[in-house]
Image (cartoon, rainbow over all chains, first blue to last red; front, side, top):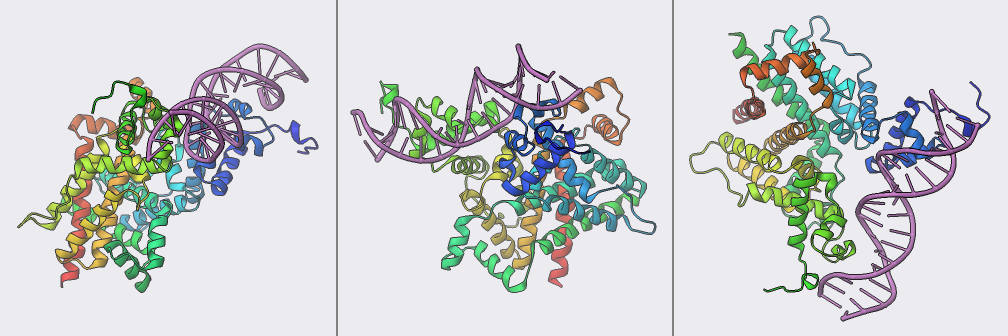
Length: 217
Length: 217
DNA sequence: ACCTGAACACCGTTCAAGT
DNA sequence: ACCTGAACACCGTTCAAGT
């Protein structure tokens, strides 16, 4: 459709959400403001309330957008794929979904469970497919909650603004703490957050496997 | 000291922080406002800036308070105590520190690492004592980051406001989803969040133990 | 149906001026 | 040194009124 008069354009729910996401990347989570979203769409702030119940509603939908980018469709393990390989992939993608946008972890973790539809669908997919792979419902639930809690917690920390204090001390070479020693080791061995995340995830998956084997006895 | 004139009382940094924490429990995190903290102390909002750099500074100190309640002094494993028993205890206490106050997980997870002193001391204690127990610095670091990420993520989810949608559906008995099935199973078997947390933690510790044994070969 | 215009009740932060 | 008083530049939300 052609729109010669900018002011007269109707806005839709989707545009509001997309604008909010781009604002998230530009200004961070606390820079996502209904007033700024409205301004971006050449509309008054109150107008948004016709399309959106309130700000939290918008935040939930933003979480949906982030998740949809990494989970365009939810599939179970491919044939012959071991559940652990599939689950690892899901966790890696969840992290990617959060990392892809500034403060993405806070957005996803802050979304209300039943309102961010993708979140619920993700849970159902994880647990459903684990059960199909032979897990009891209980163990599948524990596995979901353990792995996803890990991913949330890890990426929230990962995306936290770097501490200015640590940076200055590192520059001055004054910090003799263990934290400083880790910094040095990470640099010397090229340990990246990606590696840290994967190695931690591997340990968790190992624990799950043990539990899974006990269950099968 | 006696204070007959309320208005003339000097306020101290500690009072500000304590007031903020009690406000957190009463009104939740978004109810913690510099203006309300000031009002509680019979002072104008601007006055707080003499004692506190800004709001984030206050938030960091609040995280310190929560952690100090559960970690009055930081001790390594008792003699003859296995590292895994000690580490499990530290994780349980970290969760308790967060659970003890409304939205405590968000407060702790939102604190800047180098500003919330307790957080840094906690990391040093964990990693230092794991190294003392025979861990390589690398494995100790991974173990810290994996377990603590899990605790953060778990408690943040745990403290998230319950979804009104799920509650209404549960009442109407309409929800036939897997999520609903889990609700029923949890109720039938008396599975509590405490149990979920501990079982997940156990799986992670199992994974760490395996890694630790490989390292020792 | 969808938006304007304007208000309401708030925020964090700054800063001259008081004591 | 520590606080007042007042301002500045914002917020989310509501709602009569317009079109």
